[in-house]
Amino acid sequence: MSAKYAVFGQPIAHSKSPQIHEAFAAQRSQALKYERIAPNEDEFESAVEAFFAEGGQGANVTLPFKERAYAMCKVRTERAEQAQAVNTLWMENGQLHGDNTDGAGLLADMIRNLNWKLINKRILVVGAGGAVRGILGCLLTAGAQEVVITNRTFERAEELAQQFNIRAVALDALAEETPFNIIINGTSASLAGESLALPLGILADSAYCYDMMYGEEPTPFMQWAQTQGAEVSDGLGMLVQQAAESFYRWHGWRPATVALLKDMRDASTETLS
Ligand code: ATR
Image (cartoon, rainbow, N blue to C red; front, side):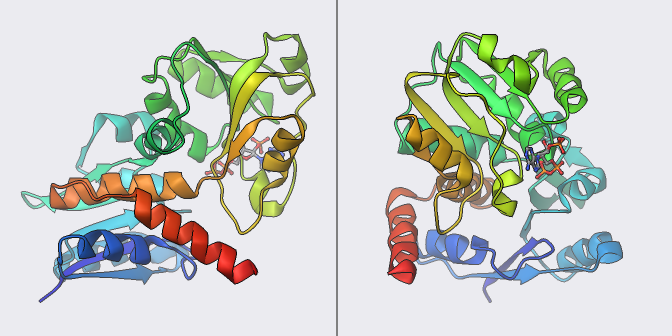
């Protein structure tokens, strides 16, 4: 019988996780069943419990349930504790365990896939919601000179800055900062097709801009960055890399990601043409 895995989220119909995990498993001819589960708002916990009671071996969790998955876990990794959110669940010794692989996925994509250098760089993170809390701990291990956070609602940036011992800067004070080498958009603005109110002149020469969202077309943030000559990326690679980290956690071996990522990009280009 195939091993059983799933991703929980709401909505979940367009999740690429089944495709990604099945492609990873196929690299070693491993049989794996990976389904999408969209519990009702008040049924997330019971749906997770039922999944594992029925022999589920691992689950991913996405919006809006990551914080609730965190609350359910008896044992959590350090990076899950920092994120206060869990995207990877499994059972061990009869206890629900949780990890958060988002930050590791982002770093792997920037450093290994995109070959971006983070050491001694000035990094600006935009946003102060769950997505940003999920990646800050890992980002702070990357050897940057400084990681600064900004957000539309400044108090939320200040709160996160305090928790992670970094500096928060208001949007309208960014122009006074030394220019940044890397800007990471961790807001949900791109989902709504909205741009960020970032001032001009805050990018250093040869800067990189990363949008943690992905879609068929460059997000408004990516377009903003491109017009200023920055190298840009969407978050598709982060999605594949966080999945690879989850896969490693469950199966104990690291899948190859480069060819899969290329196939996914080619497929989305074909859909457009
Ligand atoms: P998530 O879990 O995706 O991070 P969230 O906790 O609702 O979701 O946080 C969304 C983030 O996107 C916040 O930083 C939000 O800014 P506010 O704190 O000011 O609400 C940011 N965001 C959403 N839409 C935005 C927009 N149009 N412009 C700028 N920031 C936006």
